[in-house]
Picture 1 (spheres, helix red, strand yellow):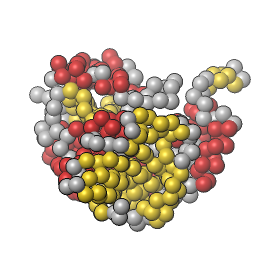
Picture 2 (spheres, rainbow, N blue to C red):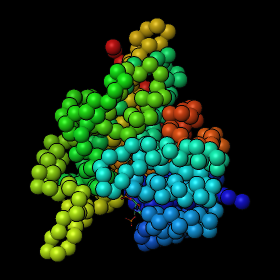
Picture 3 (tube, rainbow, N blue to C red):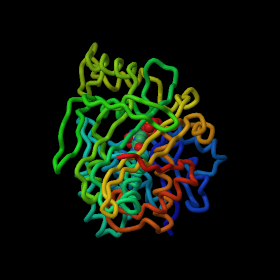
Picture 4 (tube, rainbow, N blue to C red):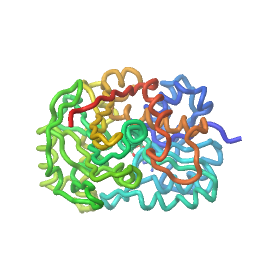
Length: 394
Ligand code: NDP
């Protein structure tokens, strides 16, 4: 019988997923962690007193994945590797008839662009095979989608405007470092901004639109408009939507470093030749920057990620703010990872828990807001990511 979960990826987020899955061992029964570097899996296995099995896998290789899945026979695979592996892991799940979950949209290594098209294309095949794929079960995407579904269900008849607000006020003490995979992070931040209004996407220069938002338990922070993947599915599933935007906070020092690195070409993702060796500048930068998984111990402060929605309820205008605050040090104490990994890993575990318990289970490929949000919202409160909701003046 197929039982338990196969987690692929032993980075910052994978570490949190493992710790949280072990805390919920009654649900998951059997946990296997596989990743490219076995020593990272061994380390985590030690930390959780041997309560997980481990394996080495190259998740770029579909045949290797198929072999591993056949050996482990899990109920589902949690893809906690990188967005580059989404399609190979989805394909391996299809071939073996095993459910799939991830936290980030597929991206091709050579093109800094992400979209759901290629993953949504698996919908029909997953339906025919009788398996489910849950896309984007992290915080954003993930919890932000669930927040929107919850607001739509309980607070609004129609939501007209959504702003997703992502603040990381953590300080790791380094002049420059990224809080999760530097390559993925810098590709995202240096890309053009995009938001959706009146039925069409509008593009802006990178970080060209700024506003100041007062984040509860943190304070006022510069917040910049960016494109973010959850908007692509939310515009399809939120009723009456007229505009959706995504803002993320950045400090002046981070932006100055990033602009400088960009100006000198260090964010380039094409190959260049140096002394007869072919290198990708962004890979060199990644090798030089602190490994995000080592930042946890040093990072102090909080994150606050939430959604502000405006619309109509019973014919009256309404504006509601729903958010979670997560403390870097507390996250580290519990899992050995800072809050950015924690806020991603906990929802990944919750998504898997709802699938294993047959609460969120439907054949095909789905985004988070397409399911009843209530169970997920309850789990957030008990698994370490409690949320608050408040009415705002219009
Ligand atoms: P890390 O770089 O810390 O970890 C990635 C892990 O995947 C590493 O252990 C790495 O192995 C492993 N890996 C990479 N390539 C392969 C491969 N070909 N085969 C097997 N294993 C591989 O990243 P994070 O933990 O920070 O991020 C994990 C995912 O979470 C990413 O997809 C990221 O985009 C997503 N994310 C989502 C967020 C959300 O809110 N939705 C927020 C933050 C992140 P090795 O140890 O050898 O390098």
